[in-house]
Image (tube, rainbow, N blue to C red; front, side):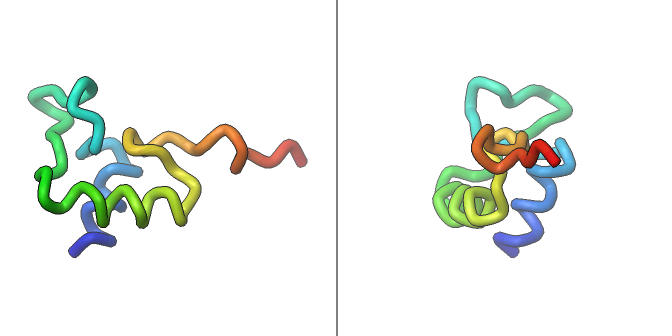
Length: 59
């Protein structure tokens, strides 16, 4: 389930950042957020689904 929520964050349907939540981009439930954030960080993304600055390759 956490992987699915992380996928939804990456694709722009959910967010882990309360300030970025809107009617169309809902917030991941608070009790699930730490696990989803951990998966996103492992995959090189921030809580909003954007690539981390250090993970972008300049090849």
